Image (cartoon, rainbow, N blue to C red; front, side, top):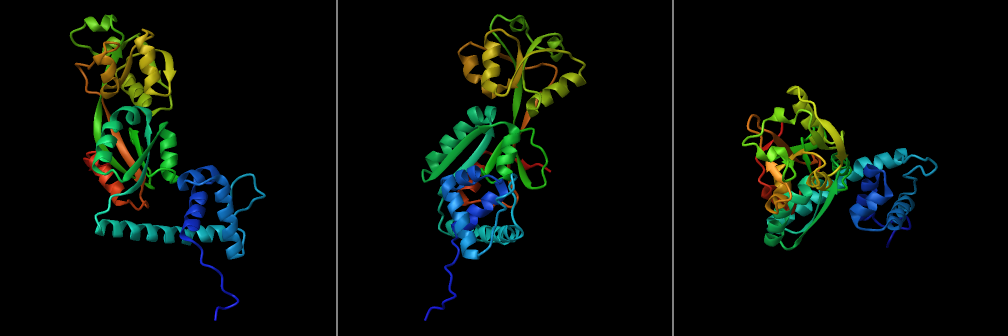
Length: 305
């Protein structure tokens, strides 16, 4: 005979929604991660509180904050989720199942250009997998990976972060681009010193690629004139095409424009400019067989120490 004190077990999905909410501190992001509405997130949290007979979130505060009970539930609930996901993934590996969804955040230049061929080839080999790619600024990629909004991040000049695993991918060669007819196109070989005093189209100051280019120019004592600054590669290219200035970008991002003769790309003859690329994921992330296969498909070469 059932006890009058019996309460239905908490569903694993509710634990996951709560843990995602605790990590992102956002009902919107928790809904996005779990492919449900914000209302559904609120309903699941309320249901958890009702089942556990305790408040989990301090709703009177403007800033998101867990109660002491909420912090305890997150601590133990996270372990339950990791154990459950690890079990599911191991069962998939035993049955050679490659399926599920991979959520990726990439900076614009990587997501729009380098990543697409890999995704296309991967989906052809594994049609049961769904790959969702978002284009973000670098700081947002890190935030989304740490907040579990995405599974994998792709960034340039990867930063060391104690909670992240960083894997080095093949670096990208950087080239100078200019409009056809620019004086540089008459040069047989371009030297970095020729940029002195040039009108320059750059990325915004907080973008890692911009910081790296600035460091390189400063080390060689070269002063340029920043006339325009943008947050993505596509706008930089359009500005160079109309002759507003020159720029330094990854070679792969301008292959199409070079083939159509709307841009000229020139390597430097006196210096090697390469942009390191890193794949990042949370160290605590339980990688599914699909995620492992996808990472392998990106031709990983070595971990960054």
